[in-house]
Length: 378
Image (cartoon, rainbow, N blue to C red):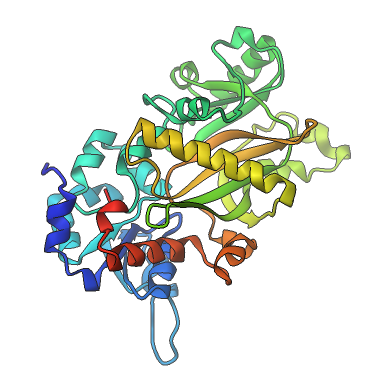
């Protein structure tokens, strides 16, 4: 594969006709909407059988003006994205690519992160070398960054025999390779009993369980702190906050006490189903920003140029006293929730609601007009 050279690519681009591009999943509509809002073209790469959302229901049309997707490119599968012929088509369209979680998940099923970083010949908004930090088996991963930033995160247990409190066990799902299986337990005996049942049900495998992460279960409401670091302005922003809706854990929460016994043996599933907006008390905002700033500084030292654009610290707020954030996960790319625009934080900053997709497109325009695109692309 050819090595990506951002300077050479940008010299060949028509910078007055840049195209923001993402694969058709996760937050692609947010990217398309944001591009149009900032006056940029957009392109969504779809996989065969998953194209209607973009080619029919949200395609841009006129008279009257509606929809947000300008153009689509249909592939047999998302992994074809790294084919040289596809990359050349994207280069010809002056593409700036935005990675989302689906991009990482689907391509990493076939390619290593080294191959993904080398194979993407088009410029990527953000730091392509930080995407791997989300994986728990990579060097300088999110746990390492959180520790260096002195951000509280759940205590980890090296062995099931060490469990002495309520923990969450996170292991690869045996049937759905890009999902994880979760279960709660509070003792080594309970761990063995639950793991045995899930292996029997086909949710877990013995091999997957060997690499499972066992971590303290933090009690409190969850909130995703969706940040945006702007290299052009040199400032950290809070784009918005949200919480997750997940199967089947949200359904289990709604079971009345009289029926709890009937669901006691149903394994917990935490697959993403959606997000809803959730605001913070203002007393927590300064703590949130301090965490975000420490994370940005550590990421820059660990893997220059560090964070560019959106990232999220996914937290639980524990009761204390005092109340405190416990960060259980980090997202180092565009977050999954377009609903963050419906929290007030972007309007406090910009005087109107600005979605994360539009904020990315704004940063691209700021950088282009200032002759600083290499500061936001890798």
